[in-house]
Length: 207
Image (cartoon, rainbow, N blue to C red; front, side, top):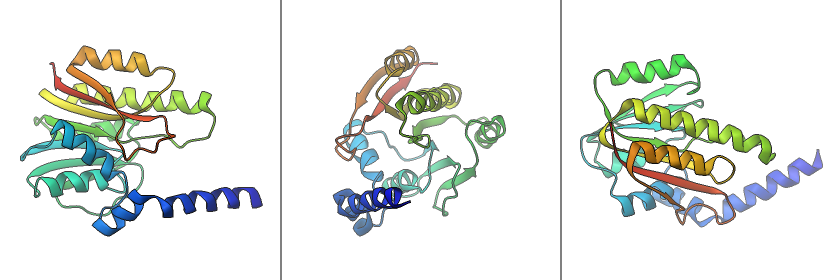
């Protein structure tokens, strides 16, 4: 038992030293992940008042928090996560497993005839440490996120999705290019340097 405790302590110590963790606390954000979206948005100018946004993997809510604060609440956000999330202005939250048809049907029912302007996905599976297991799980989630985006986005809409570089990534990017006019892969400064985490930014959805 001593090994895991040392490992956990080391992770907590890294968290405490992380400048983005410290800055998020000072600035009142729910997690350091907010700076990833902020850095992407500053370059891509994703957000406009009146948007309808679907936020996958939303908890604890920093991405939804950023969107609603940036737009002064002039937006509608549907947030989805397995974990609970404290209430946020402009956010309608669905707690459940995005991979289940019932949860997907709930999202579609909430949208009704309305189409989304932006789909965000910061989803990631529970990491086992076994790359041969973790990478397929990750790719399955991003493929589901892309499938949802193609179902709910209006023409010209955008899709931002966390991806871990590895087997299947190139094929996923090619598939995204079938649906969007512009696709790029970016690594925000707030992503940890040693992580394989990058973000796919797809613009101008082609119906």
